[in-house]
Image 1 (cartoon, one colour):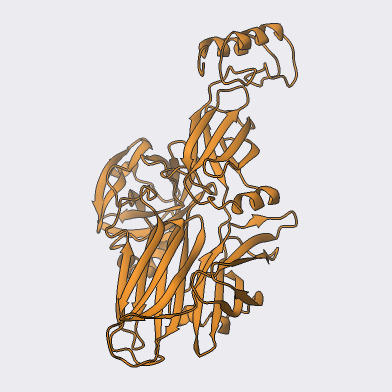
Image 2: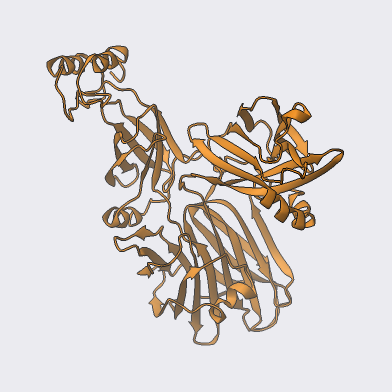
Length: 538
């Protein structure tokens, strides 16, 4: 969506026109229904009345067929699906039927469209055309969507290791080997290796071919990738560079495990380091807490200097930019660290109150070697501060109480939460400090093995299996369910007991469990809900 082919060149070539377009034609996008999801697009022609420039065509740009569909078109306009524009093949076009139907200077129109996929987006590229007699001009703009919920998303990262080649002569084939552990579901990654001259000596990409997006979490990777790099011709003590980049599902973890050089039957182990940042948790004073865990994932004792910067504004590219971050950013945390093989250590780091959200963490660890040059590790990870779970209860009124129980099917850990729906029937859960500590101390926290039971007040519950956290299921960040009211006694069966409870409380007022529709009185409406849904869940 954000890297549509052909669009970048168009935007660069039309840079001056874009500034004028943004000034004279205003386009706003609002998420109005997350259940579909459905968006409203308002277009206002701010050109001067005497200019004659009118808007006659709009494209919502997209690269996948059958995703964008119109839901509301103003009078005098037509919508067409999967229409190509420039190099982008499957766009939603809105077009005026006659010159009189165009958006004249000072005029405005409102359009609505939906996506056939459930994953919401944060922005769209919008192309529009203005006409004045026989003259036409086309512009494109990236429009952020208003009222977007904070939902789980990919977290980008880069990692880097610089390790010296061994001595002992050049006889035999020399190899550089390591394992790349993915403890957090990875949606994409790239592993490369470079010799001292900068020549690429290894390259691996996941997924091997582009996959249909969105949704993108139909495919993800959890596990370990082993790499074996031909280092023939390496001199003694030459610095080789390993690079990793990619995106993970709402998490931050990587490392270079069991890093070693091999020549025939001789192994030259190197310091090995793995690391993991937890999602951050917001404290009452507005600061945020994040846990950094270092793991000695090799066979040598690990000793070195750790430095971390917590307030980066962007992702740093692997190479000189990442390796040199300390020249431009002061460390927020520094310490000496010593770890035996397979040992780990954690630090709780505080992100200051005035720090904007979703920062990038920059890290460096210089691992000492008593008999040679150190092995250097550098990393950059985006902060994760998203809801733990997001749900949509179709038909739920605003402020409807919801109970959520999260259970690990692997470790048995259970944590309960309470929430309320908003005006769009959406609820969100963000853990407090105690729940945050319990969750991210669980060894299976990033495994898609969680069960989530959702119990709206007075309604039958629903349990979701194999849920990823933070997030939802593997295709859709929302846990979606209908609101089926009638379960007065909360036993997940709408039966005679619920009917009798309504009858015995009939006419009473106040905050009562028998008041299923929460209108303040137990009456016929509540009785009918039980009758219409009788037998559900039993």
